[in-house]
Amino acid sequence: MRNALASVQEENSNPYVQITASQWALGGVLLLVYLLTIGTLNVSSGSPNVHLVYISFLAKTALLFAPFLIARVKGWGWFHPLVFTSLWLFVRQVLPKSGLFVDGLSYHEALPGYTEASLNLLVAYGLGLQAFALGITYLGYATAPRFKVPSLSLAKPSRPLLKTILIGGIAGLAFYRIVSAVGGIGQLILLRGAGLIGRTKAYGGGQWIFLVEQLTNACVIWFATDDRAVKRLSFWGLFVLSLALVFGATGSRSGVLFPVLFLLLIWSIRHHRIPFKTIGGAAVVGIFLIGFLGELRGDRSLLTKPFSESTTDVSASPIEGFSEGIRTIAEYSGSAEGMYPILARVPDEESLLLGKSYASLLALPIPRAIWLNKPEAAGTLAGQVFFDSPGRGVPPGSVGEAYWNFHLLGIIAVFLAWGWFLKWTGRVYLENRESEAVIAFYAVTILIARPHTPTLYEWILTLLPMVVLAYFILQRKGD
Image (spheres, rainbow, N blue to C red):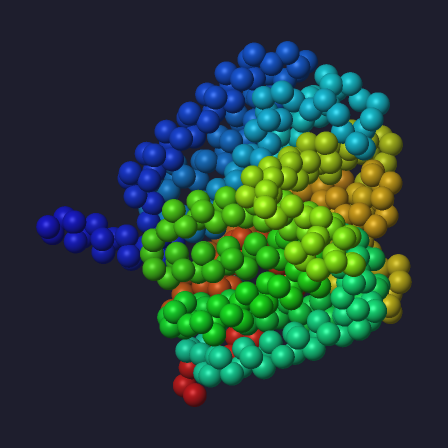
C-alpha cells in the first residue's frame, strides 16, 4: 500500500508528467514493431536506393527516441521539452511518411527531371541531415548557458466569461469587417482556397485575421486558469464559435486543430496524466477534419447553394474525409516536400539566402503596406523559387531552411541555438509553473515553436497576444 502511494506521489510530483514503466515498455514494443514492419516492406521494394532511405530513417528515428532513453535515467516526463518535441516530430515527420520509407520517392513536382534513384538519394540525404540536426540540438541542450528566467506574477481569472465575451465581440466585428471587405459571405467562401497573400490583400490587411484569432487565445487562457471552465457550456460555446470564425476567415485546418491540442496538453499537464483514449480519438477526428474541411474549403457550390445542397459529400465523410486527410498529409510528405529541391539545387543552381528568410522575423511588426519589399518567410520563398507559385507557401522545414541560408554551417548554428532555447523554455516553465497561465504558454511553445520561420511566425503571433490577454483576463498576484 505504501509503495503504491509513493508511486502515485512520485507521478504527481513530476512537473513534466511521469512516464510510467509500463508506458515506456509498451512504447518500446510498438516502436520496434513499427521499425521491423517498415524494414520488411522496404526489403521487398524494388525501388533503387530505397535501402539507403531506410538506413537514414533508422538513424533519424533512433535519435528522435534518444530522449526517451534518457528519461528513464533522469526522470524526465512526457512534456519535457526534449521528450515532447521529439515525440511530436515523430508524429508529424515520420509516421505520415511511412510509405516513403518503404517505397522511396518516384516523383517530385519541383524536380520533374530527376530519376527515382536520384530522388531516393535526396530523401536519404535529407533524413541524414535531420538526424544530424537532432544530434546538434541535444548538444545545444546539454551545453546551454544559464540565461535569466523571467518571473510571471499571474493568479486566478477575474470575470473570465465577461472578458472573453468582450474579446469575442471584437473578434466578431473583425470577422464582419472581413465579410464586408470581400463583398459578402459568397466571396469569402470563394477566397477560402486562395493563398494567404491573396486573402490578406482582399481583407485589407492581416490585422483583421489577427483580431479574429484572439477569441481562441482568450478561451485557451480561460481553460488553463479556471478548473470550472471545462464544465461550463458558455466556455464550450465560445470555444466552438472561435474555431468557426477562424476557419471562416482563414480556411486554415490547423487553425481548428491546434487549439484543441492546446486544451489537451494543458489538461494533461494540470492533471498529471495523459488521456490516451481521448488523444487517439482526437487523432482520428483530426485526420478526418483535414480531409473534410479541405473539401469544404474548396467547395465552390456553396456560393450559390445552402450547405445541405453543397457538392461536399457529407454522407460519405467519415470514410472519405479520413482518406482525403491521409492523402493531404502524404502530399506534403513526398511529392510536394519543400526540402528536397533545396538539397538538389542549392548552392549550385540557387544561391544561399545568407539569412534572408530569418530576417523576415525582424520585419514581422512592419505591415507590408508600409514596406512593400520586406523579406519573405522560407515557405513563401520556396513557393516562388522552386515551385514557380508566387502565391503558394511550401514550408521547407527547419533543416531545409537552415541549409538554404548557410549550408551545413547553418544547420549547426540554428540547431545549437534551438537546443539552448529548449533548455531555457523548460526552466521558464519550472520556475513559474505555480502560475497556471504559464502552462498555456508552455503548451503553445512546445507544440508550435520550431527553428523555422513559418512556424516561428505562428508561435510569435499566438504567444505574444496570449500573454497580453492573460494579463487582461487574470488578476495580478497581490491585487
